[in-house]
Picture (cartoon, rainbow, N blue to C red):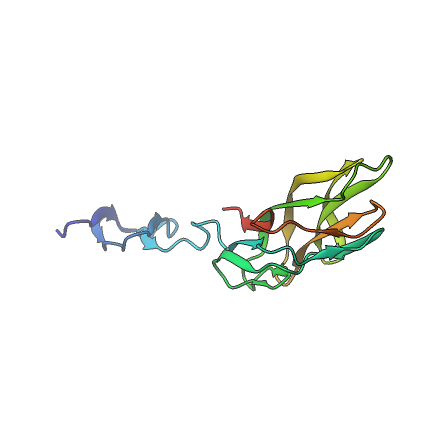
Length: 183
């Protein structure tokens, strides 16, 4: 035999060698009557996956307005090149269950009674997760979401604030958006 081969049996009960696979491949069943085969798993690495940061204080959220976060200027990683400037698009053939995380940090200057900061993760125009902090002078908070998504669906992060004035997102990697497909 050859180092790495596995002995199996064919449909007639005769022994057969399963050819050695490559690094990272897994042994999968080919069904009754056929020997197993080594294959590269389609989703073994939780991909696609991405993580992007806002690194400079450039995105302003106007008072009483919901704004899509667009000023990501550091892309930590993007396994399938599916994140483009302000949103992630589920690639063709990669539909499935996804997990997303987002966070923001910003300062309204002074605490304002009955006012709020809110972040959302949206699939298209539909909110799939929302988190609100009330009476903020300074806000640093995050959100997570899980969703079953079709290919072509776009996912984005949005922020709302009604502090009475404009608010600028903190840079230095304090605002981020990321996600991955579950295996």
